[in-house]
Image 1 (cartoon, rainbow, N blue to C red):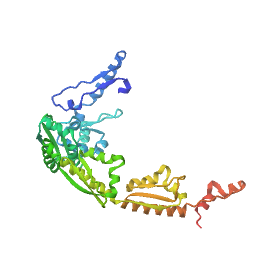
Image 2: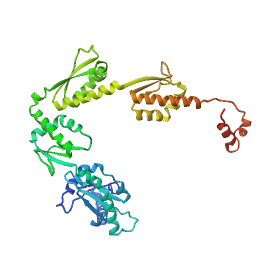
Image 3: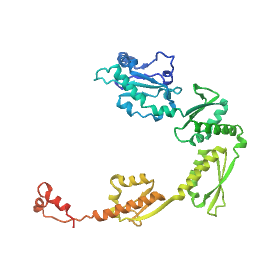
Image 4: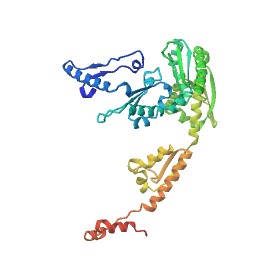
Amino acid sequence: MVTKFNIKINAPSYSSLDVDENQSVAIQFVCNKDNKEILKSARKEIVDVVNKITPSYIKIIDDIESFVFAQIDNSVAISNNVTVIPLGKLGGFSNKLILVANQDDDEFAPSIDEINSRLDAVDQSFNKLRELSKQIIGKVIDLPNEDQKKLENNNTLRLLINKFEPNTIEIKLFQNKDGPSDDEIYLRGLKKEVTSAIDDIERAIEDIKNYEVASKYNISIAFPTKLLPRLIGQKGANLNAIRDEFDVKIDVSEDNKEEETSIKLTGLKTNVDECDKKLQALKKKWLDEKTISLFIEQKYHRKMIGPSGVYVNRLQDRYNVSIRFPYEDSEGDKNQVIIRGPSRGVAKVEEELKELYQFEKENGVKDSIKVPANVLPRVIGKEGETINDISRYRY
């Protein structure tokens, strides 16, 4: 409608629509003063649309936690031509789910029974979410505004949330279950996660209040010396990024003549523990990485790579590896293909490339012969019959 009438429309906020006491809403139209007549047409079109959506076309659901709205499956709604509006999630403070039965312009108005049947079918498709909602709890923690700001301004809160699986918990500062609140924190999610998060937050709050002492917490871990250059990165870029991510101090021992080097992590306990997990994961990943060189004659490279790299990219994505075919003008051995990545993935790719290489050697032979132009029609045959017979012949 904005494009159609070349105007600007300011719609009401979702939060204002989620207030039961509001019996009407304001929609603002903006245009050049020379186009005032266009506003009348735009207003009329909106009024016509609204008038078609009578209360019988709408169903409001409020017995499903908005926390699980992200898991809504719209397939039943689509098949019944029903729009699902997660108003509670959009507005931020309720469990309202709005179902609207749509009507195409070229169809007759459905009966009340037909509308109810479509809305009920969509409603019942959410029963699994109703069961999941029973596992959702909400808790409010009292915390002064200033302390919340400290929690907000460092990486601790983000690290706390990252400890949990996605869509299992949400933590909202300056809010309770009903909306904004200066001195409260609202936690909502699966009971186990919320209970654990409360303990973590209370510990983090105490650490922040006693930052001078708490920030001196430290542990030392052993890291393979051969992997240090990769961990540190060019001009320390990788290590600095990890420091910033976890807001910790990282000291690498200069005594790195042994197989493993000591790395000291210092900071708030939550941050240090999460940084330790990150470094352990990197160590495990890098130690498992393997690089091999596979002999494949260069004349088969183009076919094995595929158009725009489609075949090699498919293997790289499937097994999370890097496959490097040498350039045609590169120096060195042009028949060596380098595969690098997790050992299991490298082994799988090596196996598949060997099979493909063998197939191309057996079936990808090309040769050229000269055929006099005057006999070409006989070689090709009627509708290509003769040459097709030749192509099917096996020696």
